[in-house]
Length: 342
Image (tube, rainbow, N blue to C red; front, side, top):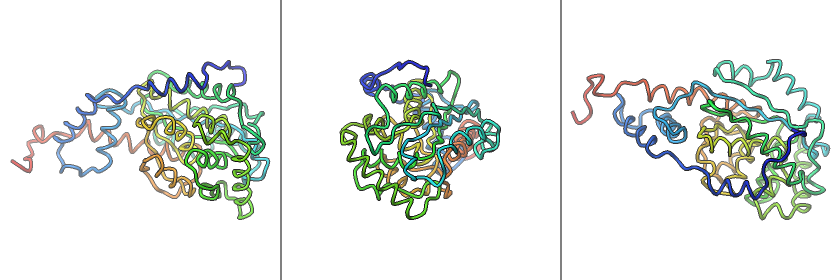
């Protein structure tokens, strides 16, 4: 990433957000009309019906397809990790990236089950962001470069994008972003992340409080919050979400850190995440608070907090199942089944 030239500025990103493509109402309506004719009581497949219509609406085609899902995991390091906010050292980020590449992580197994294409994107792991307790984590150029890098994950032909991250210290960064975007106190947003003890939890809250004092501008602008507290991987996720919207690719968001990166776009425009679903509810307490703030109901709640796109990957087969039922079920007329009226 370090060799890339910044392709965008914050002003250009704001202009992009103001002009995001909207839903394809014709495709969404076609999905709704077919749903009403399928051989089942109305609403009996619950959220699977919602998912099938959402997919058609944002792919811009009916019926929607999930033959080519991609899982994109972005990895970056955080300067604030030096303050003991994680149970693991920053070296673990690169070690886990190697584990992904060797097929040994949970996300690798989940991708195999989901028949998904896994791509892992390293963002200058040897050079972490600055310690945000002393000032901004990134300059605007660095942040924009990372967002542009994330946009490259959305290649032609991808039909569903599952996003995740790896980065020691990023649950602290996520909590700081959320505190800046939605208010409250640091303790409202922090959790145990990789499994820190009570002292580690206190260090996380203290780091966020110091960061808010060092970066007062972060409360006034969503992209400043990302620049001041985020990591390269979180900025890349925000970029990938924007690129997916432009390319009409529905998005599955992973847990707390991933959703915090997405929330930057929500604060910029409340419609910016309409093409996204949150795959699962993390046990990080700040995630439930964040989901309420952005108005998203997760698809799964399995007590997970691993990150690395694991929850988003797990949800791919739910989306695939929803689309399969929608496209493959017979209508009442085709099956010769009487409707309630008939």
